[in-house]
Image (spheres, rainbow, N blue to C red):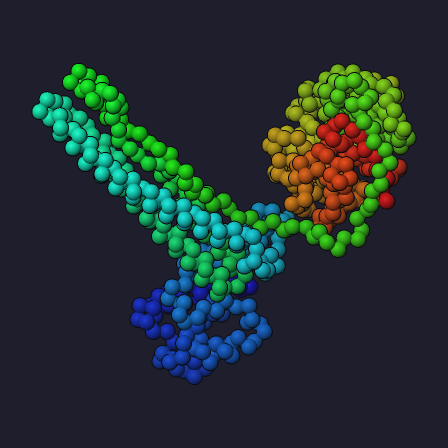
Length: 583
């Protein structure tokens, strides 16, 4: 698999196999080369997909003894003629370069590709070699889920097939009953019977033609699904992990294309009834009211739609010894300070222990001293959202209503500067001594200097046009970390805007507030998973620091104060601020 040049002879050999299969003759390549034997071997022939060679049993035994060939995909003689070579070739071949094999995998784009694609499109990605991401794929949830979904879909199609067939048979029986009932009135309503029968025939043929067409399509899809199931069984028992991995994607693509075709087939049964039974019994008096109508009964048969399987490289959760411990110092219950419940999502802390938070419910800024006592609240000029400390005397907020950033004096609460962002902004953080970074809906990330001008920053496309809240933080190396709530992910960018990694974990749902500690490790508030997650600075390890057992419920904002070595959390849907010592 490591040599892309092997694909051309592989295809030629496949065409040669077609010819040999037609003649039912296959010759051992090793015997042909070494012993110059061109006659068919009496021993069973096997095919090595990696070497692209056919071996008789003695040669195959020698081949399997070499450690270098231990993981090769060997197709035994009894499976050669039914093995899905076409599927295997499509899975192995690079989508962009048909003459090269897939060798690498990009977890960010969920795509396998060749070396040329790596150079052209994935140089900046955290790509891996296929062999590094396909280990134990036979036991993975992706492979098991695909088999289960194909089986479930196959069973659903069979069930629908039986129901549709019974539907036609039932219609035929009902048609006979219907005609018998009509003929009893022929003497009195001959003309009416003729008209109603003709109307019924047209509707019957229309319905049965549609049902027959759907049955034919269902038979075809049934056969295709059975073929996919058999192909998957062959590949799973005879191929290496990387080929199974690639085959999963190929089969998924085929199934999605099949879904587009079968989507128009409705899961229902059709019945042809007379609209008014009373009118039918008194037809001599109410002939004009009798009509033939089409009635449909929706079946409770669910045909599952197969969605693309994505291999997410999960972070390591065990053996983490450098994660910190937290000790609760104080809870500030905001609803006890004011008779009306407040809603605090974001706040910032200062060296003297002071906390200034944005109360979104009452449209004001609230200030607490280091003992957690409310010092004052100041009515805001607009709808503020994000807030960050710039110096010990100055802080900045994002005005999501007027698309701007406001800079305030902490002591007087007077406005110092107003900077228009021209677009809706949300999260904000200090970038350097002379600049701040703001999360925006369209441009993603914008860095603004002390004069209000934009600093050039190469924001990746992943963050543009998100139209969602973008919370962010900055470490000592000017690396930017962003939490994407809807995507359940955290992304890391270096000082030039290059994507370093994308973090996902089953333990983190609805990531919201984000901050970094002294070691530039990341801390994220899981608003849906009800926890605080610590992520090592390289994104490869993570650990839950606080959960519901520690009183964490729907946390929003989060900030680590390096001077005081404390972690402050906006807890319980913004009704409480929890302060933890960082141990």
